Image (cartoon, rainbow, N blue to C red; front, side, top):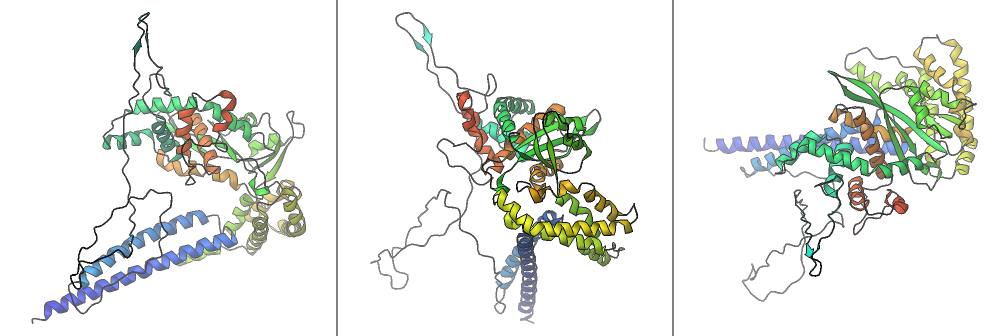
Length: 531
């Protein structure tokens, strides 16, 4: 009877140990699956159109499993401590990377022993030291900067004089440049509306009215307009642009209506161009093609975009302001074929007891042919336009010719309303636009550059729900242009905005280009690469 409590404690310890081991195994499997998926994507390229979403889901799953495993590990240790015949459990964690060198180090020296723990002797000398690093964070600190301007009086004429007041973005303003940059980046870069920011500031002991914050945002956007105009000029000086659009819910009376946010991206890096990348965003209340014509009214060149009909008038041969050549996106064309050939989705539906979607062998073959083309593209990314064209002529053109012949041979056998026929017609009707990349090394096979620019808006819609007005949509588009351009040039947007807002008032207009993201050199700071 006396050993019963010990036996129960041992059983509980063994049960906790088994749970901890099971949780650790689940976390390890999830971590390895995530690493495999990332390596496959790196080696073979996007495995499907849902790759990004699946990786995000796997990372979220890993986060929860790692948390569960740590909780079970601690429970197992506590249970093992109550018994003498069950060994404690210790997880095998992945090796942690050292903390970045740029972080400041604070040395806390623990007093050394004054006597030997073995013999009690006091004749000790220093042999070395062991350093254990702990990462810590200092909570955000608010402060009020008092600009003291001394008043002076002249003893001769009794005139009173004092230095001019410091510059603020708003007349009689009160917000410093770092605070303004935080407001702008939180709202437009991190998708945190001002009302949520105001609630957080109240908890931090700094009550700021929503209308006051909105006033500061509007004034800061007005001050940054000259930089926006220079970014716009830089984007439309390119010979090739990526274009795309996405929906933006906009608040209306008692409801919301669907506006559009357009983006035009200049990115010459795929063909070794030296011009810095940049993105220009526009807002419109609807998706009318007239908006596109206004955006590119004075531009001509190569436009990579989807097959939206609003672009068609741009490709007219008699366009007065210059010819615009269409370059179609193979990633868009691949999606419907992949949907018809998604073996993984069909297997998953079957496992869930649902009717599996039929797999089209022809669609699967076309997807595999396209994937070989994308594999060639990954090998020439960053090379010069001439080098890319030479490789495409030698390797890609035969594959494209075979793909065209295959689709034209199969198309007459399909009914007009079939999904496979629609996917083929989408390409065959625009075949010159799809094959333009073979003869021009500047052209990319996909329009992913524009889609990456719009990704933040798609994520932000879940947070800010809708734009407050049409003017709010226009203001958001302007700030997206600045923030996305900074990120494309590997610049921390918030640090850049803070420095620009502090300097722009006194900066010579003739040297305003020095403040653009790709020319920016912060004063007394190191450019952050963490964007």
